[in-house]
Structures are given as C-alpha cells and as structure tokens.
Image 1: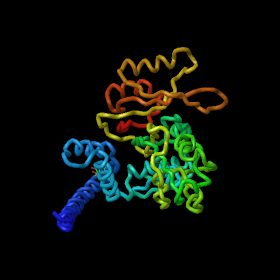
Image 2: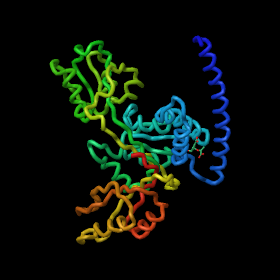
Image 3: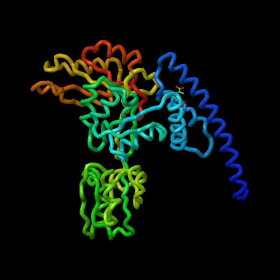
Image 4: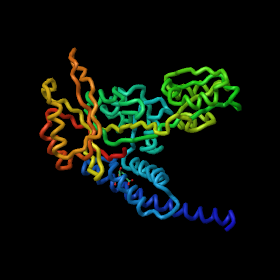
Amino acid sequence: MNLEELRHRIDEIDNQLLEFLNQRMRHVKEVGALKRKTKSKIYQPEREKSILDRLEKLNDGLLNRKAIDAIFLEIFSVSRNFELPEKVAYLGPEGSFTHQAAESRFGSVSEHFPLATIRSVFEAVSTERASFGVVPIENNQEGVVSETVSYLAKFDLKIVAEIPMPIHFSFASYAEKLNSIKKIYSKDIAFRQCTKFIDESFGQQKVELIPVNSTSKAVKIALEDEESAAICSHIAATESQLPILFENIEDSKDNYTRFVILGKNLNIEPSGNDKTTLLAKPSDSDKPGSLASFLQDFHDANINLTKIESHPAKKGRSFKYWFFIDLDGHYNDEHVNRVLTKHKKEVSLLGSYVKLC
Ligand SMILES: C=C(O[C@@H]1C=C(C(=O)O)C=C[C@H]1O)C(=O)O
C-alpha cells in the first residue's frame, strides 16, 4: 500500500473508533444516571483496573500494557467527566511531579488545579472544592513524607488509590551547546539525585548550581536566560516549551515516588489485590509488649504487614508515637475485618485500594 492508501485506511478506522467511543459514552452517561440514583461514587478505580487487566489478557496486537493504559486511562477520564465533571487538586506548582502523577491517573480532560501546600490539598477535598486530591506520600530513596501522614491523621479523608511513579529528571535549556551553560537551576534534592550527570557533563567546566523552591520555578528562570538550564520534570519542560536536551539524567533508575489520591469516601470495592493503610495508636503503648501483642493479632490472622513506621503523635509535650501501617488485603476481607474490628478503638482506617506497588 502506498502512503495515501495507508492513510485512507487509518481514516476509516478512526471513523469507526469515533463511533464506538460515542456509543461507549452513551452507556457511560446511563451509568452516571444510575449512580446518581443510588448515590454511588463516580470514580471506581477497581473497575478501571479490571478493565485494563482484561484488555491486556485479550490483546494479541502491537499494543503493550503501557500503551493500553495510556489510551484507556484517558478514555476513563473522559467518561468520568461525562458522569460528573471532576476537579482534582494537587500539590503544585504546575509541572511538579505531583501534577504529572495526577494527570497520569485523571487524564488531561479533568480540571486539575495546583495548591501551594499539602495541607491546602487536604482542605480542598474536605470542603469539596475538589473531588480528589493528589499528594506525595513516600519516596523510596528519601522515605515517608511525614507532612502527608500527619494530615491523614488530622483530616477525615481516605486514600482511594495509589500512584507509584518513577521519578525521572530532564535537563532543559535554550542553550545550543552545553559549554555555553553557566548556571543550572533546580531543587536541592534534584541536584543530589543527578550528581553523576552533572559531574560527567560539567566536570571540567565552571557551572553554578542554584537551588530554587521547585523545579517549575527552575524552568521559568531558564526560559529567560539562554546561559542557564533547568533540571526538572518532563511535564514542566514540555508545558513551558523549554527544549529538553537530555532525559532520565537521574543517578538511580530505581527512584520511585508513591502518590496517593485522597477522597471523602471509603467505599472502594475489593479487587482481589488490595492494600489497606491504617494509623494505629495501640492502647497502653507505654507498657512493655503492647505493640508486640497488637501486631501478633495480625500475624495470627495471616495478614502480611508490608510497612510499619512510627510517627510522632504530636500531642502535648509527650513523646508518644503512632504507627503508620500498610497491609495486604481489603478491610472487607473477612480475616482483615476481624482484626480491625477487635482493635477498632486503636485503629483509624485510612483506606483500602488497589495495590500497585
Ligand atoms: C462508567 C463507570 O464509571 C467510571 C468510568 C469507567 C469507564 O469509563 O469504564 C469505569 C469506572 C469508573 O471510574 C463505571 O463505574 O462503570
């Protein structure tokens, strides 16, 4: 086939796709109407995950899982916006990794808005200014984001989903040659995580590393000055049209941040592969063995605890600690429910959601 014939075929397929997508949206609208009647929630990540898993199994063409996810997550996002326009608050600024995480899950049709602090994202969801909020909860190189854990303890919000995201840094600049770059702007943490690239590219050359509050700010400065560059997220550089000279310049390819989606409701159905997050305040925590006996109940019920971290309770002058716990399973699973019910005075359930990492 020549180019014209191939493009003709593609056009015909696109016409069919459009018709199918419109058909899908008509059903989605009906689902939306049913949900309004039964007051059930619009975003059902466990249903979306099961669609993606089914399509991956069914697939025998060129698309891989990543491509299927990219296309269908966008379709789900358009669908949800047909049911009810979605507003998503995220820890900004625009172009931050949290922004990238939010868009990766909610698609580009949802309305995303940046907020300056983790606390304000919690407030936006609590006051229903946003239907969902996205905040970072831990980085596998730097540990837990303790501010997020503190607000999970304070606000009555739930974790409805998690987004594990590899953190890649891009090197972006208008400079035509590396040796014309005199200044590099970024966050300290990004400089720390890209030392190999900086040493190898600028070892011989005098270049100033200037820390700023966010990698998006770094991009703004680099846009104004051709002798400077920014180390930033891919989304920050592309949204500002600052040319990316190098991608994935981080030292460790295993640098992951886990983000969580906050919502008001707990009612996420079990998917068969779930994680539950809890804050535990074992009573008599000063007595020897009280934590051990609390944990023993999970062991006896054959529940796998995948994380336990102590976290200051921040109550009065005491040095009391709470425990931030992740476990395999859903709160509706019989064996999990039994232990949680036994300890219901000591445990706040922060959510059960599809396990992705
Ligand atoms: C249409 C629905 O609502 C949302 C959209 C989905 C979709 O587009 O397939 C799937 C789950 C929900 O997040 C549904 O619940 O079936």
